[in-house]
Image (cartoon, helix red, strand yellow):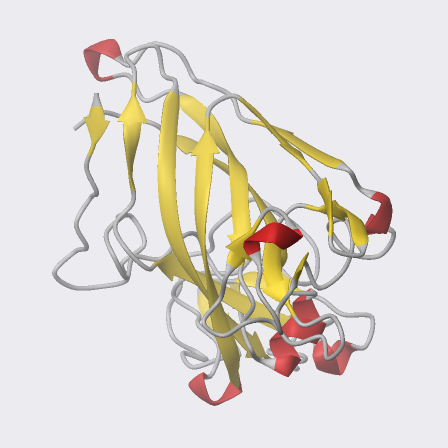
Length: 261
């Protein structure tokens, strides 16, 4: 069966919908070893989500996502520890644009950086920039294999680049081999080898597994995990490129409930 997007509500926070502009979970804290460089990511659908599902609970979704990055440092200095995103403490936002207003904590993660809430966004003045990715997620296994191209043996998300200057072609040109590129952007590369941060240069394959929740008949709402990812293209923002090592791959794991309406 084909899945249609859930429209945004007429009022309130757009967090339980899948149309363009709807939020995808609460803000995501990204701590840094240098606390002043900690950031907060707010993710929303750039376009409506789409996909297919079967009555046995298996599903495949396409998620066009927009990530907005806020350079916050410690967003809630009155709370012990470092909070890259504003947090929801005893039903009130601590820090951010809605400091002191009512909130609903979201998620189950613990630690100084949580709980965050869609009711508690960062300050607009702290926005550093944004980037988009179209992610494919499934209720099953996903394997991505790096390929050798350019000067690198481990590329997951290739884009045409000038090897001498390090600049990527603008407009962006995705590629699988150097043959897909043309001078002066003649090399098919990521920003760096491999995937996912310190020690990731040797990564040659990425495996992530989602889980189906079972039969959807009779109005059942089984718990599922959608897993997968996509490629983040060059952003042409030096700050974002350095902070998140872009362009490169993104992996997602989205737990939730699947129900038919």
